[in-house]
Image (cartoon, rainbow, N blue to C red; front, side):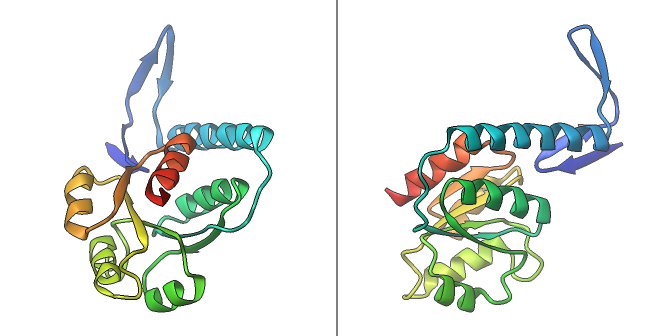
Length: 171
């Protein structure tokens, strides 16, 4: 059987790493992902510089785990972060939070990421907001182009890719 988690397709079969065999079940995959993210967060914490809270990042994703981990990482790097699981209050979020960067997932329960980005870019007040389309979808490049996103970030991603993307769209 096959499952998908943060862009990983996982088969419940044995996988060999050197002379060790590991059964790749969902609990094992989740444990590996969280351990990797926790390791990166600890490294970030130990190496972080002085934080200046100024840049605001708005994240739309229907996955609570991604919201929690991504916002924790970004907050540790000094960003003010607002997370949403849907786009129901899109206008209010944009008007009240005034983000410099928006991360938009594709799979959102109400309008979806492509339509949300198209809506934002069609509004004079919001059209210059920097939007990063981020998704585990295999057609992420085509969807980002269709949406009119400023850039894209494929899931899964690591902290360095996340930071690099923010720097890229802000410059």
